[in-house]
Image (tube, rainbow, N blue to C red; front, side, top):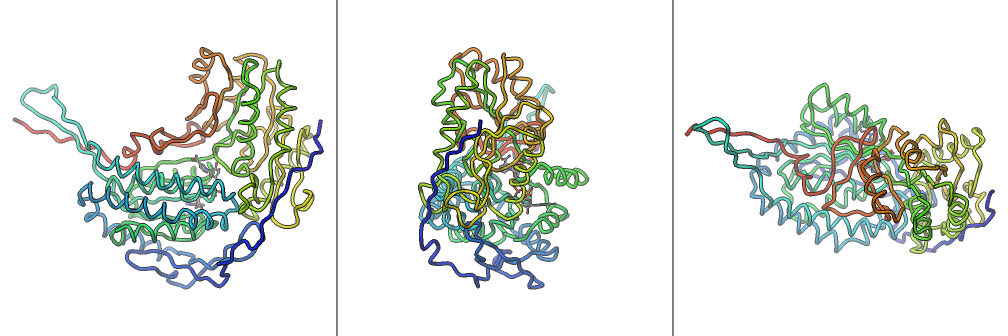
Length: 500
Ligand code: NAD
């Protein structure tokens, strides 16, 4: 069954009146906004119309070393700044973010083609994250312990680790950076940030707001560039902790390098989330959520629910509703508030996703909905668009069932009982997010425990809160971000003994 519906397509005119292709960006090292020492730059393009929008410094080893040295020089001062003072700076930063939500959101749309609705929401969340970590900065810093050994007292301190390398991806560039940057600063560390080469400008704006909020020079440094810049930062001997969000392949490379020097890591990696629909589920709510899981963020989300597991009894009904609702998803200019699907973020990303459409065809996967790309889509003349697409994926060996596609592409798998559902849900090497749709409370509790996943959503999807931890198991990562214990990832415990 292949639906032939055409998705509604929207556009807006006069997209970026402030657009300046000759713009020369500067990165932040210590107190200075600088070019790369050797003058090297790279160019950035808007994924909607492929227009070049600026030149950004390409940091080399020398620039990275300078940034790490600046962070090191600032460390002692920041670590000994009273926590209340650090919290006040984070709160001022939160307010400046709120005052600049529109600028931050539009800049990210310009960079990664995500929809303005998503990027506004993410920018508002960013301010909440800064406020949340301002509160955590004021929390308790250790325990007083009555030791087993008579005549002694003991207590623990939680001390900042030192210089943190924060490496971020492009798909939610500021939000995912903030889960590293704000806790690191709240705990008294200094930071060298390496944004994705796709999204450097929004990160530089965020850093500028941080400096306006009162961050001392060197507490936050930003080096711009691609993989080689990131690798130079990871390998820098001056780094004490690496906090990374990105692909599992890059994460594994970073983990190997960090292990050789016992550098602490937090790794937030890829996903292949399973959404499970049981026969007793509220099918209308479930199918709307399944669509969201496939198309939100144009599918460029680690928390995508790209594997749709449906009980045999409701399989056909669910697939029919899913195809109908996928047909209502609006594709278009990401600046149009009505758009749900924008262009894919970059040329390599478009090639990767359309490559999976070719793989699906070569594997003989049954196309249930969509499957068109670029100008094959009615009403699309420019930009790297892929339609919302759904396949039947009954074959466990199929690559589109096993691998992270990172585009608006889902696969449907049928199951007959709870055990089979668990076996299929847990079959991938990923374990970031999973969801259950059922009205049977006992089953929901039972299966939530059995899912190999860092996060389980029951009768909801993509719910986020700064005080609920997020992170993965298996190849989806190591460690947790946000949540009440988030500062643990950015502190070391010291035990102090006193003989009485
Ligand atoms: P990526 O791994 O290609 O790049 C991520 C960052 O690492 C970029 O800044 C990049 O320049 C840098 N980098 C690349 N090679 C490096 C190296 N050798 N050493 C150090 N840094 C290096 O990932 P991406 O394409 O930017 O992001 C998409 C991936 O991120 C997907 O797999 C997605 O699932 C994952 N992701 C995970 C989460 C999560 O919370 N688990 C959230 C969002 C995205």
